[in-house]
Length: 252
Image (tube, rainbow, N blue to C red):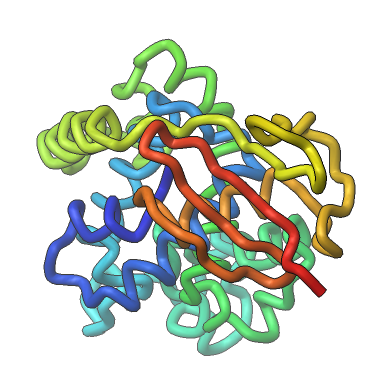
């Protein structure tokens, strides 16, 4: 659902390679956090796009401003060591700020964010941090209810940038509605006549490749338009006009 073309539509100024990198990280993180419906994805991307200026920035621009100077020594942020204010400046799509938060999300994700704070700006990690925050704040339920205002309050602490957030939310909902429908996942069975068999959703190996929701999401990200066959590891991949994803084992 979160494709490179969707990120490009959100910010046409981003290079294609950057869009693909951002989309891959976001799709993987969103899938794991069950941000998988149009309502959830639209709210998620709208908030992240606002916070990052359309995914243009993944690190706080440093002056330092007067406010940024006050990061230093702020115990509520866990900035207890000299240089922590700059070291743990805002990074990621939802600006992760302060030693305490780097420590918290590093522990949650199993990443050395305190030792290597620049990791938080990397697109895949930024996506995982944002999805973890989204989950911890219970925002899927609010997205299901269409309560974008409360989502904003929980992310921002108030309603700064409200008009831009809503504008992005409405635009992304329209973009998602215009996406081609995602059909079934079909597996070609050797010797079987007629239509391939629909995948049962179980993580079984097929053609030497372990099937999973994450793999299917990756294939849909790589091949968003009808066509094929494409080669992916031990698979041949087609996308039908109706959105069906067809997999066939590569002949050994």
